[in-house]
Image (cartoon, rainbow, N blue to C red; front, side, top):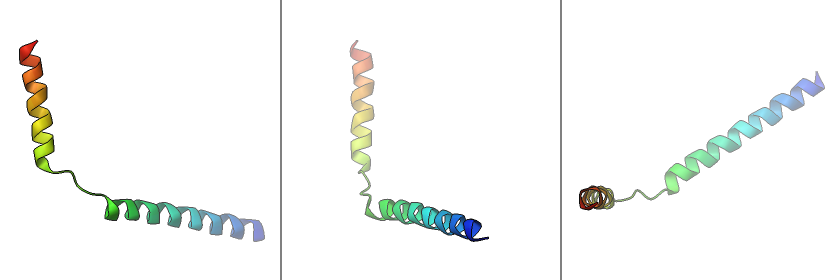
Length: 51
């Protein structure tokens, strides 16, 4: 019983750590502006037409 209790507690701690790290990454992430995506698509399109 003690072994199973230790395994369950360590599994809970690991899952909690993964959730905290994931939520922390989502909160601190800075979204890239849409203009950067449009500029990269435009430059890729012009590069294929020039070749």
